[in-house]
Length: 127
Image (cartoon, rainbow, N blue to C red):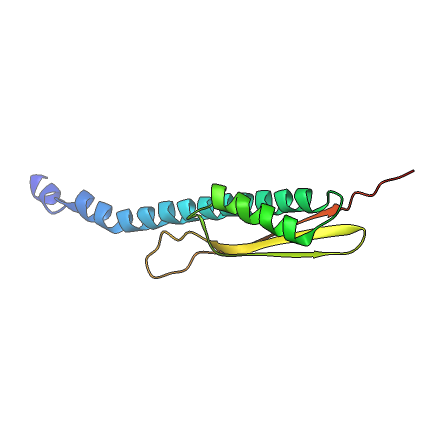
């Protein structure tokens, strides 16, 4: 009986050595996904801030872009890379789109793409 057990010595160490990289990869992927969701949240906040500022009378696309960039400078210094703010509008509405790439935990790989848009009506005085 003792001879049968001696053939299994070290089996737990081998099992751990095989499963640990898989578990580590799973945890890193979950953290990467959390960073992507957080980057989306920051991009949406910047787009909403830009739309909020841009829709105030007199409506201004430059003010909207400046507000969104200011929000990104304060909230997402390293989190959202390659970011771009674009503003489009009509006489009745303004749309701010923030795009970029989330931070990557994996060396040599770029982060996941992020794009968020906020649209709001332009304020108009009524008699």
